[in-house]
Length: 177
Image 1 (tube, rainbow, N blue to C red):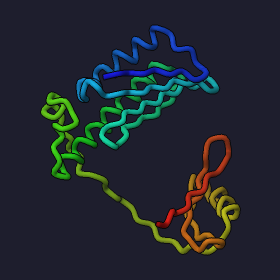
Image 2: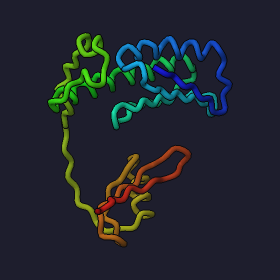
Image 3: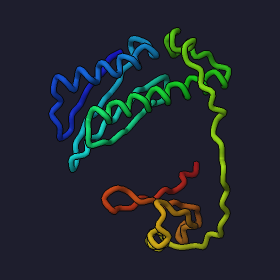
């Protein structure tokens, strides 16, 4: 496994590199030796952020964790990556593909994931009226939600607006082929 460590607005010292290599060496036993792991560390307003990206056969296993303590963020990112690898392995097995094609033998035999999949516990129905994106953002703010589904009056398509960091908004539009 090849771990590549980047630093944004943060000096990556030897102790941090050693901690990352130790933590993600445990993840390495689940993957092939030629797997590339990108770890990006950044700091913003005293918050340390750890982003881990592992490309695996056309899929991406990714974790992004933030904490005031960099080492705690590294631990959380490692836990998230392991959880995602377990879930990915189970999806492969469920889809009749062999997990041994991708994962190390020890990993396939050692871990079992007993989650029964996604469980929807609540369904909400609501009427949507045509409006523009700015009006949808205002509605979202008034409701105190982090996203809002609406019918775009300009395109006659269902869109979603969502709140981003820094008090900005995003718009999700469907891409029709």
